[in-house]
Length: 319
Ligand SMILES: Cc1ncc(COP(=O)(O)O)c(C=O)c1O
Image 1: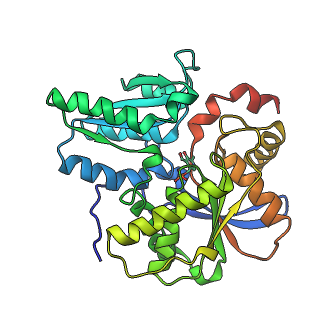
Image 2: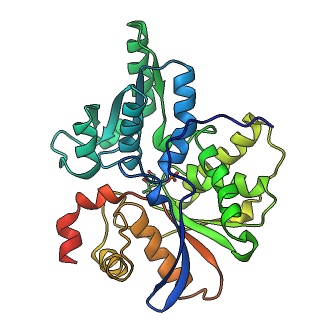
Image 3: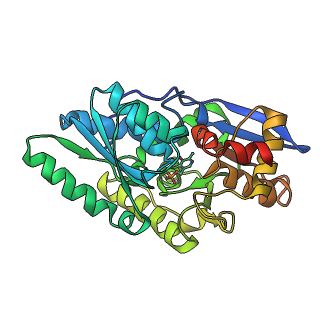
Protein backbone atom coordinates (compact mmCIF):
# COMPACT_ATOMS: atom_id res chain seq x y z
CA UNK A 1 0.00 0.00 0.00
CA UNK A 2 1.34 3.42 -0.99
CA UNK A 3 0.39 6.30 1.30
CA UNK A 4 0.92 9.75 -0.25
CA UNK A 5 2.54 12.56 1.72
CA UNK A 6 0.93 15.88 2.55
CA UNK A 7 1.74 19.35 3.80
CA UNK A 8 -0.08 20.84 6.77
CA UNK A 9 -2.81 23.33 5.88
CA UNK A 10 -5.86 22.29 7.92
CA UNK A 11 -6.58 22.76 11.61
CA UNK A 12 -7.48 19.18 12.33
CA UNK A 13 -8.90 17.15 13.99
CA UNK A 14 -12.04 19.21 13.47
CA UNK A 15 -14.44 19.13 16.43
CA UNK A 16 -17.53 16.95 16.75
CA UNK A 17 -20.45 18.55 18.53
CA UNK A 18 -23.73 17.25 19.82
CA UNK A 19 -26.58 19.52 18.72
CA UNK A 20 -30.28 19.50 19.41
CA UNK A 21 -32.40 21.09 16.67
CA UNK A 22 -36.19 21.12 16.71
CA UNK A 23 -36.05 18.52 19.46
CA UNK A 24 -33.84 16.14 17.48
CA UNK A 25 -30.37 15.42 18.86
CA UNK A 26 -27.57 14.68 16.41
CA UNK A 27 -23.82 14.77 15.88
CA UNK A 28 -22.17 17.28 13.61
CA UNK A 29 -18.54 17.18 12.51
CA UNK A 30 -17.31 20.71 11.94
CA UNK A 31 -15.12 20.61 8.84
CA UNK A 32 -16.20 24.21 8.37
CA UNK A 33 -13.70 24.85 11.17
CA UNK A 34 -10.63 23.45 9.41
CA UNK A 35 -9.44 27.06 9.15
CA UNK A 36 -10.67 30.57 8.47
CA UNK A 37 -9.73 31.86 5.02
CA UNK A 38 -8.54 28.35 4.28
CA UNK A 39 -11.51 26.38 5.53
CA UNK A 40 -14.01 23.70 4.61
CA UNK A 41 -13.65 20.22 3.18
CA UNK A 42 -11.35 21.29 0.36
CA UNK A 43 -8.45 21.99 2.70
CA UNK A 44 -8.03 18.32 3.50
CA UNK A 45 -7.64 17.51 -0.20
CA UNK A 46 -5.33 20.47 -0.83
CA UNK A 47 -2.86 19.20 1.78
CA UNK A 48 -2.07 16.29 -0.54
CA UNK A 49 -2.34 18.22 -3.80
CA UNK A 50 -0.02 21.01 -2.67
CA UNK A 51 2.56 18.52 -1.45
CA UNK A 52 2.64 17.22 -5.01
CA UNK A 53 2.62 20.73 -6.53
CA UNK A 54 5.59 21.67 -4.36
CA UNK A 55 7.37 18.45 -5.26
CA UNK A 56 6.93 19.32 -8.94
CA UNK A 57 8.21 22.84 -8.15
CA UNK A 58 5.08 24.45 -9.56
CA UNK A 59 4.91 28.21 -9.61
CA UNK A 60 1.33 28.52 -10.86
CA UNK A 61 -1.73 26.56 -9.76
CA UNK A 62 -4.71 26.20 -12.09
CA UNK A 63 -8.12 25.25 -10.82
CA UNK A 64 -11.80 25.61 -11.61
CA UNK A 65 -15.32 25.86 -10.18
CA UNK A 66 -18.30 28.23 -10.04
CA UNK A 67 -17.82 31.96 -9.44
CA UNK A 68 -18.58 31.30 -5.75
CA UNK A 69 -16.45 28.17 -5.60
CA UNK A 70 -15.19 27.39 -2.10
CA UNK A 71 -12.62 25.09 -3.60
CA UNK A 72 -11.24 27.84 -5.85
CA UNK A 73 -11.02 30.26 -2.93
CA UNK A 74 -9.28 27.69 -0.73
CA UNK A 75 -6.85 26.99 -3.58
CA UNK A 76 -6.07 30.70 -3.93
CA UNK A 77 -5.29 30.94 -0.20
CA UNK A 78 -3.20 27.76 -0.23
CA UNK A 79 -1.28 29.06 -3.26
CA UNK A 80 -0.51 32.31 -1.42
CA UNK A 81 0.69 30.31 1.60
CA UNK A 82 2.96 28.27 -0.64
CA UNK A 83 4.25 31.35 -2.56
CA UNK A 84 2.61 30.26 -5.79
CA UNK A 85 0.31 32.14 -8.14
CA UNK A 86 -3.20 30.98 -8.90
CA UNK A 87 -5.21 31.05 -12.12
CA UNK A 88 -8.91 30.31 -11.85
CA UNK A 89 -11.28 29.20 -14.63
CA UNK A 90 -14.69 30.04 -13.23
CA UNK A 91 -18.21 29.40 -14.43
CA UNK A 92 -19.58 32.97 -14.36
CA UNK A 93 -19.06 36.31 -16.05
CA UNK A 94 -17.29 39.63 -15.59
CA UNK A 95 -20.56 40.88 -14.13
CA UNK A 96 -20.62 38.20 -11.39
CA UNK A 97 -21.11 39.86 -8.00
CA UNK A 98 -17.78 40.50 -6.30
CA UNK A 99 -18.90 39.01 -3.04
CA UNK A 100 -17.91 36.15 -0.76
CA UNK A 101 -15.47 33.73 -2.34
CA UNK A 102 -15.01 35.79 -5.50
CA UNK A 103 -14.08 38.82 -3.42
CA UNK A 104 -11.36 36.80 -1.68
CA UNK A 105 -10.09 35.42 -5.01
CA UNK A 106 -9.77 38.96 -6.36
CA UNK A 107 -8.37 40.39 -3.15
CA UNK A 108 -5.57 37.84 -3.22
CA UNK A 109 -4.80 38.66 -6.84
CA UNK A 110 -5.83 35.40 -8.50
CA UNK A 111 -5.95 35.63 -12.27
CA UNK A 112 -9.51 34.82 -13.28
CA UNK A 113 -10.92 33.67 -16.62
CA UNK A 114 -14.71 33.56 -16.68
CA UNK A 115 -16.38 30.86 -18.77
CA UNK A 116 -20.00 30.59 -19.79
CA UNK A 117 -21.94 27.40 -19.01
CA UNK A 118 -21.12 25.82 -22.38
CA UNK A 119 -17.40 26.57 -22.34
CA UNK A 120 -17.30 25.40 -18.77
CA UNK A 121 -18.17 21.89 -19.98
CA UNK A 122 -14.74 21.88 -21.66
CA UNK A 123 -12.89 23.45 -18.77
CA UNK A 124 -10.39 20.60 -18.44
CA UNK A 125 -9.40 20.99 -22.07
CA UNK A 126 -9.17 24.77 -21.67
CA UNK A 127 -6.95 24.44 -18.60
CA UNK A 128 -4.80 21.88 -20.37
CA UNK A 129 -4.25 24.16 -23.39
CA UNK A 130 -3.52 27.20 -21.25
CA UNK A 131 -1.10 25.29 -19.07
CA UNK A 132 0.69 24.03 -22.20
CA UNK A 133 1.13 27.62 -23.38
CA UNK A 134 2.57 28.70 -20.05
CA UNK A 135 4.82 25.66 -19.89
CA UNK A 136 6.28 26.68 -23.25
CA UNK A 137 7.17 30.01 -21.63
CA UNK A 138 9.08 28.09 -18.98
CA UNK A 139 6.45 28.21 -16.23
CA UNK A 140 5.63 25.22 -14.07
CA UNK A 141 1.90 24.77 -13.84
CA UNK A 142 0.09 22.30 -11.59
CA UNK A 143 -3.52 21.71 -12.58
CA UNK A 144 -6.06 20.79 -9.91
CA UNK A 145 -9.31 19.54 -11.47
CA UNK A 146 -12.78 20.44 -10.19
CA UNK A 147 -13.09 20.16 -6.44
CA UNK A 148 -9.59 18.73 -6.04
CA UNK A 149 -11.24 15.39 -6.61
CA UNK A 150 -8.43 13.24 -7.93
CA UNK A 151 -7.25 9.90 -6.61
CA UNK A 152 -4.59 11.88 -4.74
CA UNK A 153 -6.91 14.63 -3.43
CA UNK A 154 -9.40 12.18 -1.95
CA UNK A 155 -6.76 11.03 0.55
CA UNK A 156 -7.97 14.02 2.54
CA UNK A 157 -11.17 12.09 3.23
CA UNK A 158 -9.53 8.70 3.49
CA UNK A 159 -7.57 9.99 6.46
CA UNK A 160 -10.70 11.76 7.74
CA UNK A 161 -12.20 8.36 8.60
CA UNK A 162 -9.19 7.49 10.73
CA UNK A 163 -9.52 10.88 12.44
CA UNK A 164 -13.18 10.14 13.15
CA UNK A 165 -12.34 6.73 14.54
CA UNK A 166 -9.92 8.35 16.97
CA UNK A 167 -12.65 10.74 18.13
CA UNK A 168 -15.73 8.58 18.61
CA UNK A 169 -16.77 4.96 18.74
CA UNK A 170 -17.48 4.80 15.04
CA UNK A 171 -19.35 1.51 15.38
CA UNK A 172 -22.08 3.50 17.14
CA UNK A 173 -22.89 5.44 14.01
CA UNK A 174 -24.64 4.07 10.99
CA UNK A 175 -23.27 6.53 8.48
CA UNK A 176 -22.16 10.00 7.47
CA UNK A 177 -24.15 12.47 5.41
CA UNK A 178 -22.66 15.33 3.39
CA UNK A 179 -23.19 17.36 0.25
CA UNK A 180 -21.63 16.05 -2.95
CA UNK A 181 -20.36 18.28 -5.72
CA UNK A 182 -17.42 16.71 -7.50
CA UNK A 183 -17.77 13.58 -5.36
CA UNK A 184 -14.28 13.47 -3.85
CA UNK A 185 -15.37 13.81 -0.25
CA UNK A 186 -17.75 10.86 -0.51
CA UNK A 187 -15.24 8.79 -2.51
CA UNK A 188 -12.53 9.37 0.10
CA UNK A 189 -14.84 8.39 2.95
CA UNK A 190 -15.87 5.20 1.13
CA UNK A 191 -12.25 4.17 0.68
CA UNK A 192 -11.34 5.23 4.23
CA UNK A 193 -14.14 3.11 5.67
CA UNK A 194 -13.23 0.13 3.47
CA UNK A 195 -9.58 0.34 4.55
CA UNK A 196 -10.58 0.20 8.20
CA UNK A 197 -13.10 -2.54 7.47
CA UNK A 198 -15.99 -0.46 8.74
CA UNK A 199 -19.52 -0.99 7.57
CA UNK A 200 -20.27 2.68 7.32
CA UNK A 201 -22.92 4.13 5.01
CA UNK A 202 -21.96 7.20 3.03
CA UNK A 203 -25.03 9.30 2.27
CA UNK A 204 -24.48 12.06 -0.22
CA UNK A 205 -26.82 14.82 -1.26
CA UNK A 206 -26.12 15.62 -4.90
CA UNK A 207 -26.13 19.36 -5.51
CA UNK A 208 -24.52 19.55 -8.96
CA UNK A 209 -24.78 16.32 -10.95
CA UNK A 210 -27.73 13.97 -11.30
CA UNK A 211 -27.99 10.85 -9.20
CA UNK A 212 -26.51 8.42 -11.75
CA UNK A 213 -23.63 10.69 -12.73
CA UNK A 214 -22.53 11.47 -9.18
CA UNK A 215 -22.78 7.82 -8.16
CA UNK A 216 -20.56 6.79 -11.06
CA UNK A 217 -18.06 9.57 -10.37
CA UNK A 218 -17.79 8.63 -6.70
CA UNK A 219 -17.37 4.92 -7.38
CA UNK A 220 -14.87 5.53 -10.24
CA UNK A 221 -12.80 7.82 -8.03
CA UNK A 222 -12.83 5.33 -5.16
CA UNK A 223 -11.90 2.38 -7.42
CA UNK A 224 -9.27 4.48 -9.19
CA UNK A 225 -7.66 5.35 -5.88
CA UNK A 226 -7.59 1.70 -4.81
CA UNK A 227 -5.79 0.85 -8.06
CA UNK A 228 -3.39 3.81 -8.06
CA UNK A 229 -2.28 3.25 -4.48
CA UNK A 230 -2.49 -0.55 -4.49
CA UNK A 231 -4.87 -0.56 -1.54
CA UNK A 232 -6.03 -3.85 -0.12
CA UNK A 233 -9.70 -3.18 0.28
CA UNK A 234 -12.96 -3.49 -1.59
CA UNK A 235 -15.69 -0.90 -1.95
CA UNK A 236 -19.19 -2.06 -1.13
CA UNK A 237 -21.43 -0.25 -3.59
CA UNK A 238 -24.40 -0.65 -1.26
CA UNK A 239 -22.59 1.52 1.29
CA UNK A 240 -23.09 4.53 -0.99
CA UNK A 241 -26.53 6.11 -1.05
CA UNK A 242 -27.35 9.23 -3.05
CA UNK A 243 -30.14 11.31 -1.51
CA UNK A 244 -31.62 12.93 -4.59
CA UNK A 245 -34.10 15.76 -5.07
CA UNK A 246 -32.68 18.44 -2.79
CA UNK A 247 -31.11 20.71 -5.40
CA UNK A 248 -34.02 21.24 -7.75
CA UNK A 249 -33.50 25.01 -7.70
CA UNK A 250 -30.07 24.45 -9.27
CA UNK A 251 -26.51 24.50 -7.96
CA UNK A 252 -26.18 28.27 -7.82
CA UNK A 253 -29.56 28.83 -6.17
CA UNK A 254 -31.21 27.99 -2.90
CA UNK A 255 -34.97 27.94 -2.34
CA UNK A 256 -36.67 30.18 0.18
CA UNK A 257 -37.89 27.20 2.22
CA UNK A 258 -34.38 25.90 2.59
CA UNK A 259 -33.11 29.29 3.71
CA UNK A 260 -35.95 29.44 6.27
CA UNK A 261 -34.88 26.15 7.79
CA UNK A 262 -31.18 26.99 7.90
CA UNK A 263 -32.00 30.39 9.38
CA UNK A 264 -33.83 28.67 12.25
CA UNK A 265 -30.92 26.31 12.58
CA UNK A 266 -28.44 29.20 12.69
CA UNK A 267 -30.51 31.03 15.29
CA UNK A 268 -30.76 27.92 17.47
CA UNK A 269 -27.20 26.68 17.14
CA UNK A 270 -24.95 29.51 15.99
CA UNK A 271 -23.94 27.44 12.96
CA UNK A 272 -24.19 28.99 9.49
CA UNK A 273 -24.71 26.84 6.40
CA UNK A 274 -23.89 27.85 2.82
CA UNK A 275 -26.43 28.12 -0.03
CA UNK A 276 -24.87 25.79 -2.62
CA UNK A 277 -23.93 22.73 -0.55
CA UNK A 278 -24.57 22.48 3.16
CA UNK A 279 -28.03 24.11 3.13
CA UNK A 280 -29.20 21.45 0.69
CA UNK A 281 -27.49 18.65 2.61
CA UNK A 282 -28.95 19.85 5.90
CA UNK A 283 -32.51 20.08 4.57
CA UNK A 284 -32.14 16.52 3.25
CA UNK A 285 -30.74 15.42 6.61
CA UNK A 286 -33.62 17.08 8.48
CA UNK A 287 -36.34 15.66 6.22
CA UNK A 288 -34.95 12.18 5.61
CA UNK A 289 -33.10 11.40 8.81
CA UNK A 290 -34.06 13.61 11.76
CA UNK A 291 -37.78 13.46 10.95
CA UNK A 292 -38.13 10.01 9.37
CA UNK A 293 -35.31 7.69 10.40
CA UNK A 294 -35.20 8.62 14.05
CA UNK A 295 -32.84 6.57 16.16
CA UNK A 296 -30.55 5.78 13.25
CA UNK A 297 -27.38 7.56 14.11
CA UNK A 298 -26.08 9.37 11.09
CA UNK A 299 -23.44 12.03 11.53
CA UNK A 300 -23.88 15.31 9.66
CA UNK A 301 -20.68 16.54 8.06
CA UNK A 302 -20.54 20.34 7.80
CA UNK A 303 -18.23 20.86 4.84
CA UNK A 304 -17.95 24.65 5.14
CA UNK A 305 -18.67 27.29 2.53
CA UNK A 306 -19.60 30.23 4.76
CA UNK A 307 -18.35 32.84 2.27
CA UNK A 308 -21.00 31.71 -0.23
CA UNK A 309 -23.64 32.99 2.20
CA UNK A 310 -22.37 36.55 1.74
CA UNK A 311 -23.22 36.39 -1.95
CA UNK A 312 -26.84 35.60 -0.97
CA UNK A 313 -27.11 37.87 2.03
CA UNK A 314 -30.34 39.65 1.01
CA UNK A 315 -32.02 36.29 0.38
CA UNK A 316 -30.77 35.01 3.75
CA UNK A 317 -32.12 38.09 5.52
CA UNK A 318 -35.52 38.11 3.80
CA UNK A 319 -36.40 34.45 4.35
C1 LIG B 1 -18.96 23.68 1.17
C2 LIG B 1 -18.80 22.48 0.29
N1 LIG B 1 -19.42 21.35 0.65
C3 LIG B 1 -19.36 20.24 -0.10
C4 LIG B 1 -18.64 20.22 -1.28
C5 LIG B 1 -18.65 18.98 -2.10
O1 LIG B 1 -17.48 18.26 -1.98
P1 LIG B 1 -17.04 17.30 -3.16
O2 LIG B 1 -16.72 18.19 -4.34
O3 LIG B 1 -15.85 16.62 -2.63
O4 LIG B 1 -18.16 16.40 -3.46
C6 LIG B 1 -17.97 21.37 -1.69
C7 LIG B 1 -17.23 21.35 -2.95
O5 LIG B 1 -16.91 22.30 -3.56
C8 LIG B 1 -18.05 22.54 -0.89
O6 LIG B 1 -17.43 23.66 -1.23
